[in-house]
Image (cartoon, rainbow, N blue to C red; front, side, top):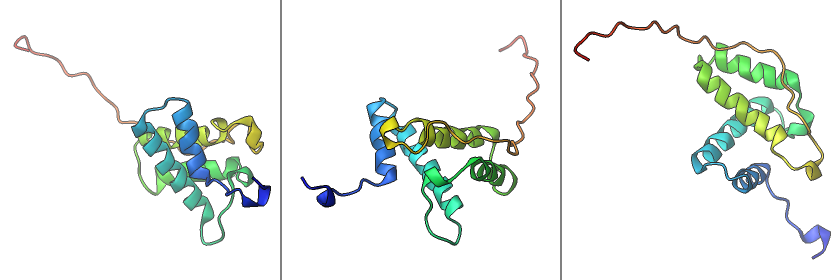
Length: 124
């Protein structure tokens, strides 16, 4: 088939394919694709779509800070979003050639709730 006749596979479809090749759970696949889509929409802003290869640590940092500060997500939710973004950069095959490691920086971390142990009664 000629090169110009091949259709370009969308980025999120590529992510789904890699997740399936690596035998990730279907729910994990859905979750990661949703978080990656939210990340790309956040980085898009009012302008045009930007490919992840053009995004760096500052975008990842600002996205995680946005989740913690503006959206008030829990720490576990923020970690789930971070894992999805890390997968976007690490999970891709090297043939793609646009990212070998995730651009992670420092960001605001959502507060983890303090849990105090409760005494148990003898009746439990």
